[in-house]
Image 1 (cartoon, one colour):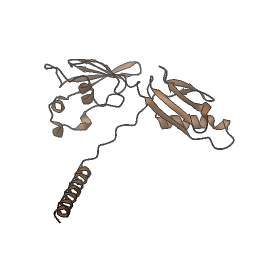
Image 2 (tube, helix red, strand yellow):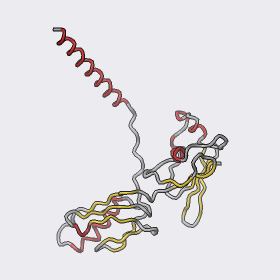
Image 3 (cartoon, rainbow, N blue to C red):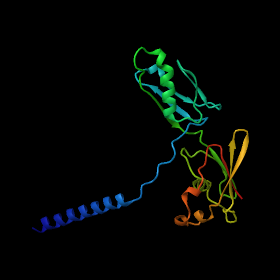
Image 4 (cartoon, helix red, strand yellow):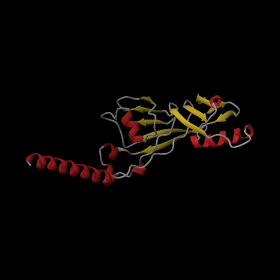
Length: 200
């Protein structure tokens, strides 16, 4: 009788712990999805046409943003979503098939083309390839964080816009001090590929 009682107590405790964990997980705020990844020069992408071994390729996007694909020719990929390329390649292959074009899938195997630089008063300045989109706060963290005398209230982001250079200013002092509840997350700019973040 004692063994049954103890076993029942243990099972009841485990059940209660599991229910509490599930409730806690459900109460966590949902993390907003980041922006969809757009292909950059230097990215390694995989293109597959289902059932067609000759039309399966892993290619690296050239500096001009393009790559070559059989029966299609040169494909401009820079700045495009993978789904955009799937539609383009499907349309380009349509004259080669009497019936329906097999399914085309495009995936990014290595997003090495997404790069940014952090310079100035950070502990580890340099150029970084994080493999995912980041915002200015995350970029500074990747660079080791600000040094003691960094002026985090006047951070600049240098961004190429065609033939011109655009300068964005951001005040991240409150966020870097941990005052996130008072700091609107919309005020944290996203880092685009090729950006240079300057911490004076």
